[in-house]
Length: 118
Image (tube, rainbow, N blue to C red):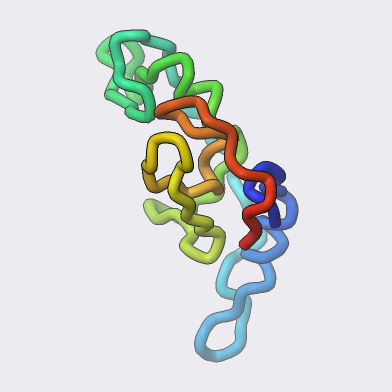
């Protein structure tokens, strides 16, 4: 999959086809959607999230970070799925990023190269 066209449905299907050591489904097909409140705050450094003192359980982030963030992120319990990991180094700022979480670089706003594939 290309870095600019991460497909949440394809990611979901990949996770649902995963099996454990005894060949049974590793994940239960009973997804729950969670909404996380993230408030824009230009005083927060790009690419970072801080606990929000105004919204309990919420976060603050730079507006660029919020725009760069993917809205469909898969998490199992407290762990992110390494099977969906797609690490690149931003060609502009050389920051290491996992494309499963970002549309573009949250630090420098550079677009990810379209030719990079997993």
